[in-house]
Image (cartoon, rainbow, N blue to C red; front, side):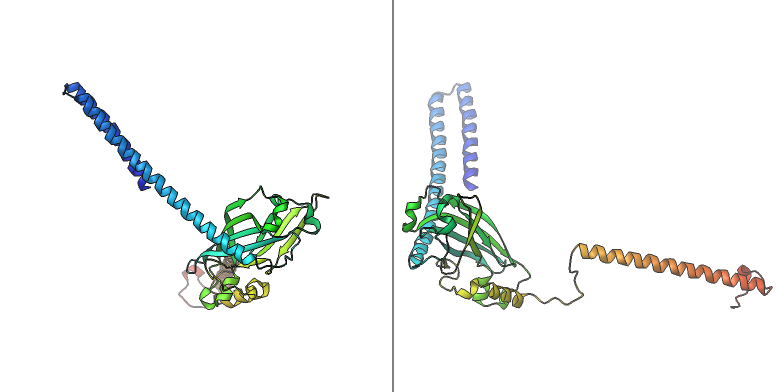
Length: 314
């Protein structure tokens, strides 16, 4: 933003200098051409300096991103190298890390990487690595979006024994605000951010969909970033996740909130309106019947008209 402002200012400076030098020539000042040339060179040097700074800033940011990516990749490969057997038919191993977490805002950023670790088995034998699709399912309290995807489309099947990265995802997650994270332990908080990972594809033999799930033995969790080295297998258990959600739910006094909004409000107000109309109509009809009865009794008793009565009640 600041660099763009500097570039704009330099551009305006060039424009102003051009106007000034034209004025110098019009006034016939000696050496006007040389003055114009020197001023123009100085202004262009300012622009070049700004562009050089901008290029340097972009290079630094790119270098920082590359360093971070290299750090994650190294940590993942070091951990996954200890896996002796892959249980899923696709021969895929995964590395999942929470890079950032805002506990107050209930948000987090996750990094997910898939690696070709072994030769595929069964229906995945004929599926090429670039045709694999990833399925990510978080606990019901968590929603996510994919903000960045990298697919290594040039991966060949022969590279399976080299633990080659084939896909990379950046996931932005959000935990339901009704979850009170302060009530949970680290393992329980982690469990709300641990997804179930599946690999999906279409068989090239009969074009039928095939699917295989990655287990905790196929995946390296939290090797960098938040919760580094704190993962336990319980965090990936659906039962453990459900217990964490139930335990952390904020207590709401029954009857103080509408369960479904705005549907609940619409239904409640509709019934209220029907009740008021029915009760009001009945009250008005009873009032009319009372007045008619009083008039009839006055007439039967030979008393003055009901409108001119003295106030004696019947």
